[in-house]
Image 1: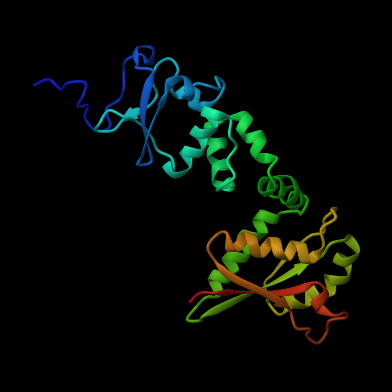
Image 2: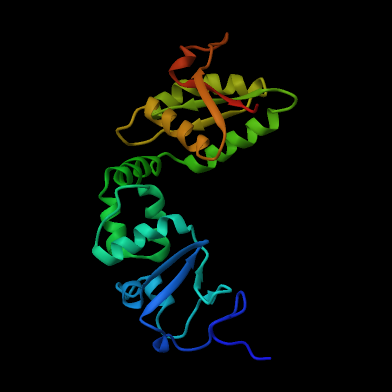
Length: 243
């Protein structure tokens, strides 16, 4: 028994040329349904979205014959509105930016990067953190240490040493050696050559660990005997709360 084109099976690969499609296209984006013009989707020829609908099809269809894109459908409406009217979204900026990157819509990407939300994250904060040696690796190390110490306890702690300059690093060396002798793990950040202060970096650490789903806070590390300076200048205790 043959199957008509109006009842395509779930996940059927489209094999015909898109040149034969109706100028009106139905889409299923992550479960959200959209109807738009083919010309709208192909508005920016160099984009990944335009390539999806150019030449030999690269998309599957759902059970109703709608082209399926496995992305968050909620934010596609902002992408579509931009393609229709050049209207740059003012809501869900961070999420829309991720989708604009995925679909590779260069004009929208550039306009979003000029928004305060993206500018602050991309141009300011990320460029600063790029100057902090091994920043991402140290974040992962903090999490590994905290998880290893979370045994039958509500909280676990990680000692962090933050030094902005080479001089500060030299001043901390004795304290670091002392902690190492006591077999206490310390994650060291810095030094770096940029304007932001130690408190700025501490805020970044908390923000990025929380972005991974952890509940975290920090406080100055209490000075211990043998330290030749006030430990709270450079040493902090990050507390992970598990329940």
